[in-house]
Amino acid sequence: MPFIQNLQNLGSRFKDAFVAPQVTENDFVIFVVGPTGSGKSWFTRELCKNDQIQVEKGQHPRTKKVQALRCNFKNDPNKIVVVDTPSFHTEVEGFDAEKITTSWIESRFTEKCRGSGILFTHSLARDPTHNDMLMERHLDTFATTFRGGFTAPSLVYVVPTQEPACILLDQKVNQRLSQLESAVTSLNDNCSNKWHASMFTEVFKGQPDAAWNVIQLLLKDMGM
Ligand SMILES: Nc1nc2c(ncn2[C@@H]2O[C@H](COP(=O)(O)OP(=O)(O)O)[C@@H](O)[C@H]2O)c(=O)[nH]1
Ligand SMILES: [Mg+2]
Image (cartoon, rainbow, N blue to C red):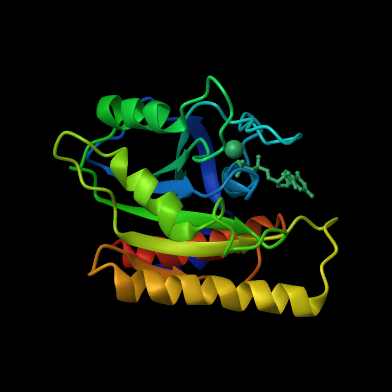
């Protein structure tokens, strides 16, 4: 059965998301990466429908650890591990997101998994050209957390996010979407095959279906 049709037939989304202590050879792995407040934990929580995922309420990064959940589609034995990473470049004292991520990857990840990819979240409330938001900067930092012979996944899907209460003029939204698209283009052009990035056209506003749609595209590119 074709992949998409197969998923549609499943009717409901991920079944039973559980904390994943370890990535196994049977898993597809999706790392959720992006600046602080961009919606990584929000996206992961809605995708997996798991209230244990800590989501930011204030300005400080709330997610101080890696939150990994293993889920699967109903009636589908493929397992997907969604890895909500702590935010890089936050300059919060006593919080070293790179170290936390490195140690998670060294102890929990295996490259023998069935495939891996990155979902990059960007909040449309923020300027994608601002130094703290730069996609390439965040991805490069994420790549440095893969050590000991491991290589970071190169496949990236960019998801713009917008909190419903955040009112932005259409003009602003369009401007930021096109800035993000330019960042995707330059990521693909500049980095000699280091990254293979695509932009998700829908804006994530908390709808599990949008999370569901982008995950299907990413998994398909990952070879599921
Ligand atoms: N409307 C709404 N917005 C949310 C909800 N959860 C998170 N957000 C928004 O998403 C922002 C980022 O949250 P979070 O996912 O923790 O960011 P992270 O640092 O990338 O993990 C928050 O500041 C809110 O604006 C929610 O349940 N409803
Ligand atoms: Mg978070």
